[in-house]
Length: 613
Image 1 (tube, rainbow, N blue to C red):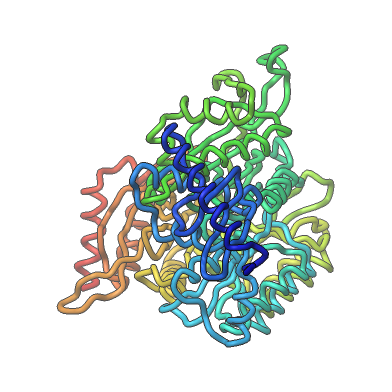
Image 2 (cartoon, helix red, strand yellow):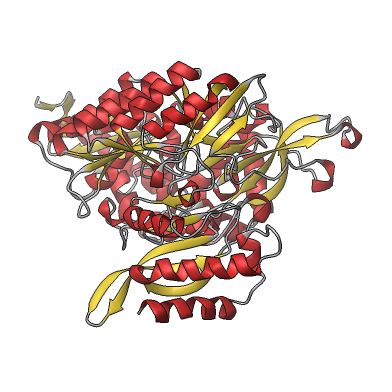
């Protein structure tokens, strides 16, 4: 009797017939079939019998990663929908099970191709062709905190396997760039040896979980959010189903400290609030809670909106998991542009979504009107740079200005040395593309300032560079239309020669509509665009003004749709002159431009455009 992989032909035929019969029976009863859409597969009670040239193989689909994801995809297919190419790629291959393929590609010194370009992002590796024929590796640094030895280790990896520099991002995170094909896995392994797990840092996963940059030492904070960010991070790493989302997802915890965490730009934002004794009750005891906000995505011109739900710190992780499951099951699997949480909320409305979350939890959530609690103080827009006192006696933190987030490996080592010598060997990153060295004694502050300046970096808040945010741009991203980092630095240098700032002004450069640098919340925002000049397309930007966040939440208005970069410095100069000559006291720049009609602002700038041409 002939056998194949342990099954006789008779057994194979029996299993195939039984499975097909089960599918027919379920179809007649209006139930979904168990075989999925892959040819030659049938399912019985969560078991797939795959029949092919190599014979029958039994696979327990109940333990196959992404089973919830597969069920969500099946629901779209059952409605006659077509999955996006990314969803189809995830359906055909387990993105977390391709390590052997990645290692072989490294040995062969080749980059991934086709769908593997997308799937490798699940391991934090992005092949950024055609901008560069190299990998970018995105890390996970929960809450933005590193030890000095980890920071040095990252620099060493960048030196050995990358371009010799490290980039800070707007998620209090780091990236290593210019990694050759044969070094990607080496970087991944090196990070693991440093205690940094970056699995799921790209593709359709939950990105780096952010918390207050000064958590634990901020004199203004209501609660230390770093433990929550770390708990959420480990929860993600240990729940395989959370790697099957329809699209990327952002989570942030704001503790009410001086530095804005931008939780209102995240899919899930936890904002600390206080219930004072005079507003407390048996049902709502005095204390610190988190206000739950959902659906932030400023690249799509939307902030996270209040759900009316108030959570204790102990409830946050479980509620976040329930929200993620509802999104996993109901997020769009066919249109990548509509596959974010915002669009489920827009389609369903908040009451229906919260009801679905409560069903997952098995209990109702606490709904509280805003008059029952107090919001934290408004953030200090310069608190992420310069010297500031901590809640601990005779301890200060210093925020370093990192020009568009980039540091050389030598600078990283020097910063780690400063943290060891004068601080507590801790480094904190912020969502403003810079870092903080905490726990400095008052007597050492001047020495730390000098040591920072010796690295070629700065700590002063008055610099335009202190409020400068820029994505990678077309020097390292295939989506970007302009060289954001280089051009942002040119603009900052131009303005610093002409102005001394007495108020903070944020300028955000993003290279494409994905808005990684969140240009819509900048005082002045720039989005890369190609501009026609004669018969050529040259680098330029859409210009928007008047964006804000936290207590000044606002989506910036478009000032000009497309301007070549060479015209931008004199335009911004003229706009700032108009502001400084006509503001009311120390009026914020965003308040100033938002009380003026766009036509008036455009006329001021067009004078500069004419002069520049």
